[in-house]
Length: 226
Ligand SMILES: Nc1ncnc2c1ncn2[C@@H]1O[C@H](COP(=O)(O)OP(=O)(O)OP(=O)(O)O)[C@@H](O)[C@H]1O
Ligand SMILES: [Mg+2]
Image 1: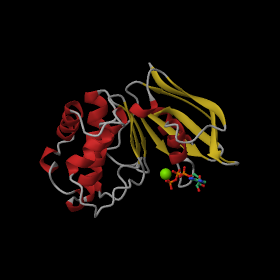
Image 2: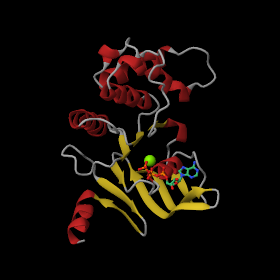
Image 3: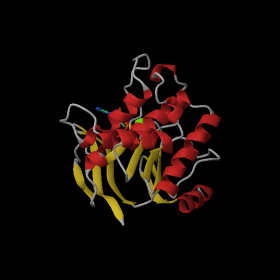
Image 4: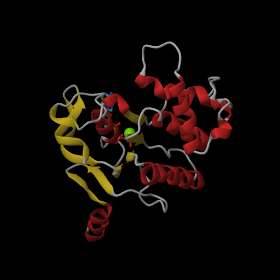
């Protein structure tokens, strides 16, 4: 079943058009990698899917999925690395989409945060300060936070940025596990198509005048025929 459909979507800022006529269906259990050069509009597309920018033309159709129940990990997350927040506080804040107007976290929200710390194998970091973590650990904490917003769809904008090869492999394994074993649909922007551990069933490739959306196999055949 399709969770989200993009129909002839054109996106941009003011009068500047960045992406034209994008058609794409995001189906349940998909793992879609979005690739393309710097400035090709990958993050812009994700903002369009999340409803953070309005289409210039075309539309985004949500099938039984509310926009604020999509987990989102932005390209640069504004958690000041010296800010003295605990891992638990950061992960818990991911549940705020479900009760923006309450003063305290509910038991259910706390259970959700604990569950996601466990799924990502970082319960041991719960009481540590975010400021004392390594880059790879921080990305997992931010992933756990975005997971608190959703049980269906995670959108990750270059989650492996600045990680070494081993940490990348570990993070990709975790994301793959969320897709395969927890039924979370994934959209991930990445520059790592050649990484051994990269996974996914579909690819959206954004290049000027050459937009491709299809299976990984088709994409590989296309590259070899170039
Ligand atoms: N808020 C904004 N206002 C105006 N133009 C913007 C804005 N954000 C991005 N752009 C422009 O839109 C184009 C696409 O940017 P975008 O961030 O979507 O690219 P990207 O593919 O994610 O690049 P990268 O790989 O570097 O992250 C760029 O030319 C950028 O300058
Ligand atoms: Mg980007």
